[in-house]
Image (cartoon, rainbow over all chains, first blue to last red; front, side):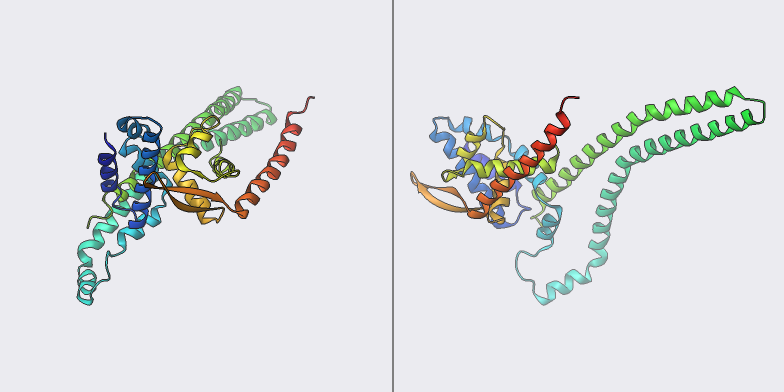
Length: 198
Length: 102
């Protein structure tokens, strides 16, 4: 890919960022490519070292706050006339459901991936509780002079399960944090790529 | 490495790269290469953060018919490096306590 192609494609993909940010980033990458070419690298080589446009957009998404992207999306490109504001307010039955639905969808997505964490921690708690309750029941039967060893066995098994489940909790938390982060970057990338077109 | 810790360390690394003389983007990446791999996007974000924190100032200078941005460290930036070195001394003391024999 040539420098001009790369920078044009990048500019098109960054429409959701504030205008000054786009120009600043483009000139930053341009300088980076030029400096590599001055060092004797071919144009294609220099561009390839920067990475793909897609990689760059995702990295930028990771570094940009969602609030900033939403603000840029909401901000009008020029000051609105009175009748335009009236139309926007008047047409709220149309756009309000869309806003609410997208928000709820994102929320449901996050809840879904966090469900695994909730489940593993619930099982963990239940196992601990079970282990303690069986131990108490065994102790009572022991005090009463008729020790019920099945209760002791259940208590030990629940304890074993609880200890094993610690790994489950750790794994699910780590997995979910990773997924949430990726989902967030996905959402932000979408804002950066399409945010400016309205 | 913990993300918060890493961010602080990266900021100071970039400041250290411009400490002795003004430098530009690609040179900073090359100078830091032996100790850490820094992508363009990451460097951009760090430079932006340092500029907002007034730890460096940016000036565009003409170079072979095109503009190149040079980064110049400020007193605030120099103080940040010193503060980091002091923090690190404390961490090293803690480390040697943790790592002591017996």
